Length: 177
Image 1: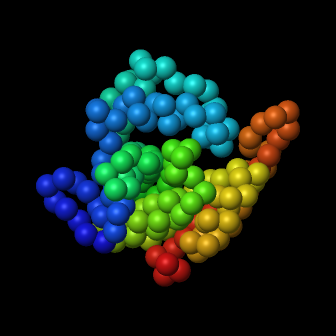
Image 2: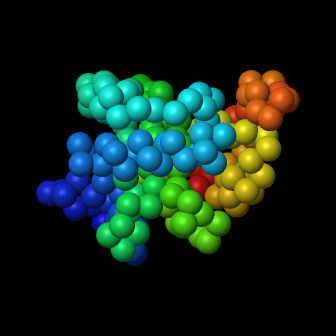
Image 3: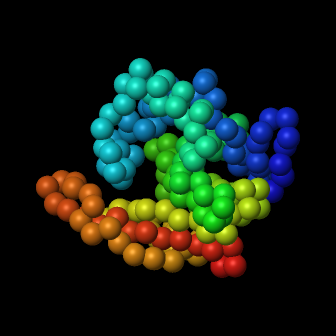
């Protein structure tokens, strides 16, 4: 991984991570409002342009949350979520949303691997964790492949298609990566 100081980017091969900027607000809103993305999130409501701008301004002031754009060959392909950033205990919650045309062809794996390296190497985290819907079999397979372990469940946390589903908590430690 290469850290480029001036552009605030982290690179590995054709993949780059960079901080979200004002120019990305509408792109991020469209990604969030993708019905397949919304289906997997705890809050599955669409976001307006005004709500997205307010979100961006709040995010820019936050010490516990960050958002990054993942680029592949210079094109925005996904949005990285870093939440519950705990610098004292070196623990962080992560998430990744990938544009539809880039799903299920290895981009999620490479993006997540870069994200993990960034969290361990640059942010000096010891534990990376996430929540995943129990019906999201593709994501669970990806996280297992990357070395994440199931820690527990939030039982019946999500209500989708007329039934309740669990949210699974998974994590990976620096020593396991």
